Length: 222
Ligand code: C5P
Image (cartoon, rainbow, N blue to C red; front, side):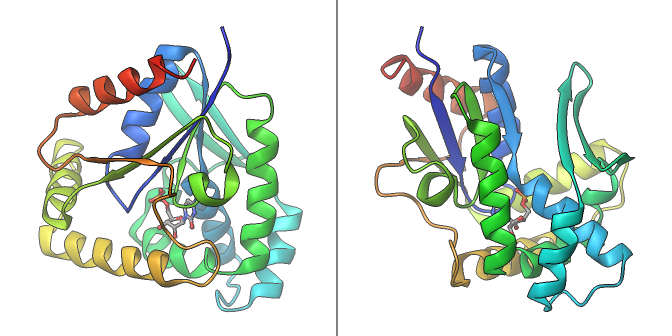
């Protein structure tokens, strides 16, 4: 059986990672969370008090760090060098700053090289903002997941409450809107649906329904 590459893009909190992980598991493919890579760099930059507008310093910092994505039965873990940053990269501080770090061309250039390297040989499900348009333009299947801001914020809010985290629905909405705006309006590789991507509006769909739709799309391409 042919091992294909699957690109899953879309705005913040559209359910990309949940769906991508399920598809990867089903096919025994590798899941690559590119957002975690930008988050890991942002975390390190904040820790080292680097000015997030300073492209040169961010690129230098990135050249000194190794970002590792590890997937096991307990879920995904993210390491920077030897530090486990799995939880800290989801903090509000990282989330509200990551789009500033991710706008810099030099940062993106290096991330894309690393991502293509990880995807080498196929058999990958990769999620992000520019996978179908830039990282894997030849992916056999490209999916663009979208959902209304209200629905995405509601899902994130309910997830937080389930995990016992403090959560404010209005703040989440604001953060999602702000991040989508920065990600769609940046000059380098902005968030866009690739011409050949298949758009799925998940507003009224369950996770299982989205996964089923994507599995059907995969069938024709393997
Ligand atoms: O997917 P996630 O929400 O974790 O991504 C965090 C941020 O990383 C995005 O808001 C975006 O600024 C950046 N990102 C990106 N390109 C990608 C993946 C993520 O610019 N391929």
